Image (cartoon, rainbow, N blue to C red; front, side, top):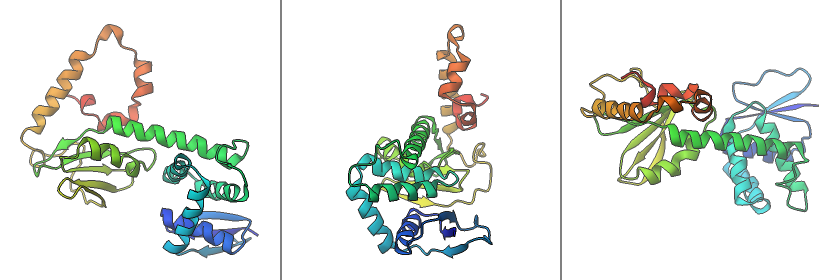
Length: 256
């Protein structure tokens, strides 16, 4: 009989679900986030409350069986938010715990192969965000950037921007998931925040922007206009490296 395990969408919640699947000896399981589950007349549904102690036990077990890169891949796949990725992560965990030898590169196992593919997709999106984030300097001296990545990569790009812009106060806001990350140079800490934006952050008013920001944007656009050599333009290659879905967030792609 199929059992739906419903959790709060957090990593600790997912790890708690995995713990419960083992403790209850559930074989046929489907994991769903709160709000996405539907009644199943042929099975049962259980709401699993996140338990840090149980979650930590699963994470500790994975750390003992996996390399640091494989553990990071597990986390990256969770951040992908792809349909049924939780089921795949459970299947991978079962395989890892059942194997006496290192199983993280056992690509003959379906879950292991899927996690490898998804991990690469998330990693590619992470690198694109690190390259395509464009900050605007706001009047209160906060550097603000808005993104809408395919996957929830904000937690993965924190080290890059913390190291590169460690002397500035900045916010990177995920428009799709309605949350952002805020860095405070005085404390050196990054925190997750929720914002209520009163206007379109892609085209903020003059009152919101720093007095010098518009000049910076014009210089940036002018620079890209002059370095672009029309005779060497390869639109197909350009779109491969800078897909059109990112253009609305790029300063150099906006009309001058």
